[in-house]
Image 1: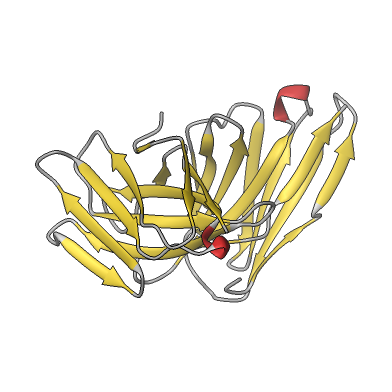
Image 2: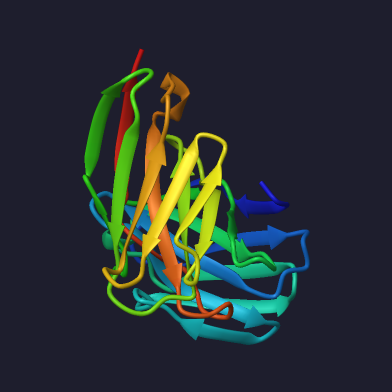
Length: 111
Length: 111
C-alpha cells in the first residue's frame, strides 16, 4: 500500500456533526489527494494538495475542507456531515512516475 | 466531470478467455493509466502509457492508446478467477495535475 494509512477505516456519524478523516504517508511525496467513491460515479476528486499548506479544490469540494500542515498528513474535514456525504473516501499520493498509490479507504456513514 | 469513460460497464467471461475493456477520454492527456480495484479495497496501479506511446505490455496485460480517437483499451489475456475486479482508466494532462478517473468496468471471471 505504498506507505499510506487512512484512519478511521469505518465511521458512523450523525447528520450535522463535523468529521475529520486522516491520511498519513511515509513516502514523502509532494502530491496528495482525497477522492470519494460512490456507485455509478466512480472516483471523484474532492481536494488535493501539492505541498505543505498548498491545497486546491476538486470536482466535488462543497461541504469539505482540507489541511496539510506536514508533508506526511492530509486531513479531510466534513464541516457538517450530511447523508449525501455517505461514501467511501480514498486518499492517494502520486509517485515520481505519475502513478497513484491509494490507501485502503474509509467507509463513512452519515445517519 | 469524468474525463474517462470505460466500456463496457460490466463484463462476464470464462476463465482462460481474453477480456477487453475500453476507455474514451475528452481532452488532451499527459498519460493514461489503468487501475484495478478488488471489492472493498483501494485501487492498485496496473500500467501507465504515455501520450507518445501506442502500445505497452506488462505480463498478461496489453494496453493500447490511440490519441487521435482519444481512446485506450486494456486487454487481459488468459483470464483467471483472481482477475475478477473493477478496472478504471485515469488520465492527467501533466505530471502536476490530479488523475481523473472513469466510472470503471466490472469484470467477472467465472471458473
